[in-house]
Length: 96
Image (cartoon, rainbow, N blue to C red; front, side, top):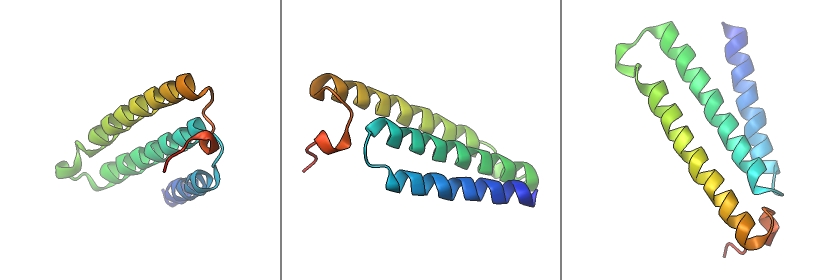
């Protein structure tokens, strides 16, 4: 069990570092965010199964629902930006 927790924590840190380093494409940033959400989902499921706390039972479902909604919004933004700008490069966006 400790190996699983260590692996998930290191995967979370590596993905977070990849998100902070990645600054070229918007779609790569969104993939890193989705990976972070899936790792958090797995950590919460493992925590709930080990503690058997009934008050935290719906938490993984709520997290995965919010993750799916965020992915849908992110994908629609990528499509809209690609149609208007021609690419999803982050340096082409004037965010200020």
